[in-house]
Image (tube, rainbow, N blue to C red; front, top):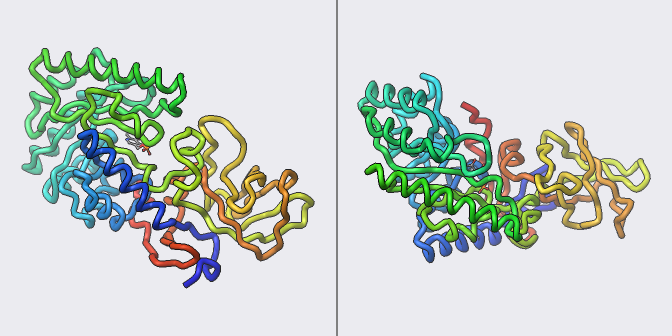
Length: 362
Ligand SMILES: Cc1ncc(COP(=O)(O)O)c(C=O)c1O
């Protein structure tokens, strides 16, 4: 089938670009002796997780226990839940997962550690735990000076296997002077934590971090030995805006059809918030995506089914029925909105993948 024959809106993955992205990061990780445990939040597709493992990933990362269950189809030797698993239903699921593969969870409180410990004992399994510290994002993670206390608690609880330290440098968005300075602070914070843990006899086996914007600078965080990037498989307009990729590294685009040009200097495409997600660029900048056919077109706003594209700066016009491809701002949320995605090469559709872990919220 050809791309032009697809019904729209349709999420396309350029297979050559994806493969290049995967290979580049696998090589970078090997070169810097970093364990790679990619986050599946971006693709949510077991076949792509399998490809990441084939290229040398040591395991996978997921946020939710239900996502992790879906990813068992990729046969990961090791699964990290990089999100606090709170509540009896979830910890029971976690224990069940631990019967099927090696499982580790990131957590940042003694309460969470106790809950996971209870479920591990009840399920007669062992669950790995990483103590999570905050390196500047201000989301989850205890302050660095409290890491030893949490690690000691983890070490004492039955059913838990203390594995080390984790953090997420999601506040480091660019690799300009400011971004590099922020990364240096992350490096210092993580090194200090590791030294504290070593002094307390709790040397971490795993020090897990990493994100796509700072991906190729991961080696600058000297104590980190594992990275878990997600977005790198496809990249998106946000990755470009961070300066972390070029447009030709963006494997994702959403194919849409022009359904109206009634308003002067504007076209309406057949995808809005149900297709693209309403994420803005965290780095600032207008619009909800890049129209590949006309970079001066601005995707200014959206309703559920309508995408408003301002063409007043554009050097070309579009006709009703024409197709356009838009690189979304935030690919992870966009993929979650689609039942299936299409792997394309040139103008041909070569793969159709169901987004099996979409909507897995628990
Ligand atoms: C805890 C955690 N680890 C890793 C990632 C992957 O980050 P990125 O998609 O920037 O590679 C995320 C993304 O949200 C995350 O929340």
